[in-house]
Every structure is written in C-alpha cells, then in structure tokens.
Amino acid sequence: MPTPDNVGEHRRTFLVVAHTGRDEVTNTLLTIARRCGEAGIALRVVDHDTRLPAQPFVQTHPVDPQMLREAGAEVEVTQADSASAQGCELVLVLGGDGTFLRAAELAYPAGVPIMGVNLGHIGFLAEAEAHSIDEVLDRLIGGEYRVVDRMVLDVGVVDPGSDVPRSVDWALNEVVVQNSTHNGVLELVIEVDGRPVAAFGADGLLVSTPTGSTAYAFSAGGPVMWPDLEAILVVPSNAHALFARPMVTSPRSRVAVEVHRDGRDGVALCDGRRILDVPAGSRVEVVRAQRSLRWVRINSEPFADRLVTKFSLPVTGWRGRS
View 1: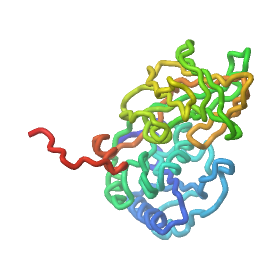
View 2: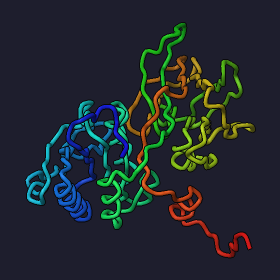
View 3: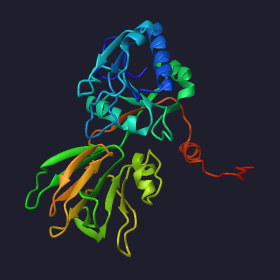
View 4: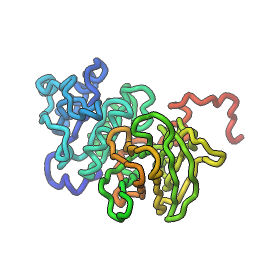
C-alpha cells in the first residue's frame, strides 16, 4: 500500500472534498462513511463547498458530520485551508472537474495524493464514476492503488526592470493571460527560452500542462496531449495574426508572455481559480514546477479509451488488428 511520508504510523485518514447539495453526492458520502468506518479508516471532511473563486470559502451546502458518524465513520470536520490535507493518506474528491481543481489546492501544498470520483458532467480529471464507488473503496481500503506524478506549472508576474516575480502561483491545468476588462484585444509578445517567437493581439493566451490539454486549451484549438507526456503547451485564443498556432515546447522551457506597455492591463488566471494582476508592460513567466501533483490511479484504462468515452468520439468501423 502506498504510504506517504506524512502518514507515518498514524491512523489511516482520508480527506473528502465534495460538491455537496445533491442526493447522489449525499448517498456516495454515506457509502464512504459506512465502508471506511468498517475498515477503521477515519474521515476528514471539508465542511463547505468551495465552488466560488472570488469567495472561496462560502458555506453553501455544509456537510452534516452527524449523518456520517451515524453511518459508522469517525469524522473530523475541517476548514478548507493549507492544513486540511496534512497527515492524510489521500484526498478523495466527489464532483466534477471544478471540484477536483478546488481539492487540488488542498492536496498539492501538502504533497498528498488525490483521486476524483465523477459526479459532474464530463469529469475528465476523475479516476472513476460514482456508480463504481464500492469497487473504488475496495481498492482504496485494500491499498490496491498506485500514485503517479502529474506535471504542474509555476507562474510568476514580473514587473518591468525587475528579475524577481512580484506575485507567484501554480497551475495544474493551465494559466490564461487575458484582458482584465474583457473589452478589446490584448497586445502580447510570446517568448520561449529567452527569445521572441510571436507577437499579436488576441483575447488571450493559454499555457497548459498535458493534463490541461483536454480542458480550456482544447476548446481554444490546442492538441490533445497524453497525460504521461512531459511538455508545455502554448495556445493563442482568438489571435489577430496569420501565424498564431499552438506550440508544444520542452518541459524545460521557460515560456513568457509580455503585455505591451502601451496596451491594456491583463490578468493571469490559474486553473480558473486564482487571479494575478498583469499590468501593461509586465510579463508572465511560466516554467515546470519542481514538485508534481501526486495522482491516485486504480485502473489501467488506456487514455485513448478515456478520450472516446468522455468526448463521445465516433469510432464505428474500427476493426483493430486482425
């Protein structure tokens, strides 16, 4: 069974982050409480939904801890903060991709593995579907899972004449540099490894990981990248230019996006959650983070099958090898 360094000899504990307020989620929570209680695994449950980026800790549909205790689990209620996942074996996410990205904000700083159970729509980041929760729990309780690394981006905003970022953040999916007012185009210069490669006006620009290639970057016309690939994807959004194609760079590249000093102010939006101001004349620098997000896998489904299922791709007529 994988044993994170921060678990040690302590009692096994799962942190649960759920998009609450729906019967399906409540029923799944009760199943988890019952099964974990029978196995002697404690639960730590985030006590509110963090669905609103501007107000990340609004309590919309709080979890009822007494209901979970009556189902048999030892339950601790926690705030959604930097200490939430400390000491836990893993973070179990119940919801869609938005819930997963919110839970990643708790798992990544603590170095705790994360796994999603899809109770949303597409749920591309989820490892399993809600209907298979008993099978999922069999694997997690039995320690029959593995942990893989997913690439993360470090993001910094650098002011003119400075080499030191004045604000920093990170992204699992992508960072989007866009107009702060959503009015008119943003004049950008794209730099890779210290050299300019393109300049144009655009709605914005996305710098994505392979994990994020099937999200916003895909909608903006970028290619799908297999998640075990290590690379950085650069995708212009509605650029006014003859050459403004997506680019795939080395994972060791430093990608910079300069906002023209005589143009509009911008913002850098990390995973659709966290906003950094990017005044005219400043630049956003993006590199691969030294640490990866630890990702729980319980099956060996090929990524191609996931693409077909999640995007309902037509594969009629496939014969395979004869």
